[in-house]
Length: 158
Image 1: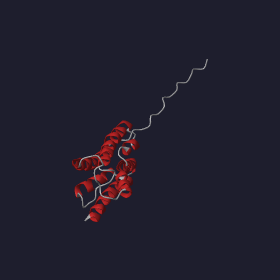
Image 2: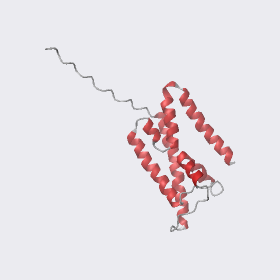
Image 3: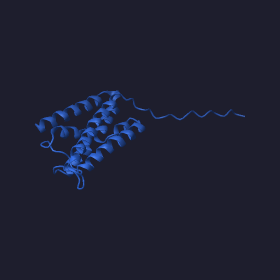
Image 4: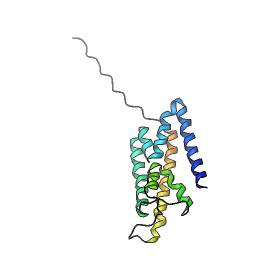
């Protein structure tokens, strides 16, 4: 079941990005969409929307980091909770990295009561799902064109 969900999810992501990259005017949006999945806020940086990029990086990155801190920097497994397992991968490569580095089951940090376990997983899951919504915003976002320097008026010959 896990492999089917992973294959379907990666196929949808891949076809979306390839479809955008195939269209001449949407290549930058395709790259931004992929960058936004890899790292929250990076897609808006690619599109030139620096304020939005920093906002989403701070908001989603902070939510993700606090959630992982609560559960001891370990990701949830399919057997523990399939909903949180699917939701956490909206954070992209950051979550895949946590999955590779800390494959053990997640438990709350030492010193935190067991009742904090579920909110920690919820924070990580919400960060991933909100990142998917932010990525959808990139499809309709127009790239900011670089500012052209103002023409310098010529001095009249004296």
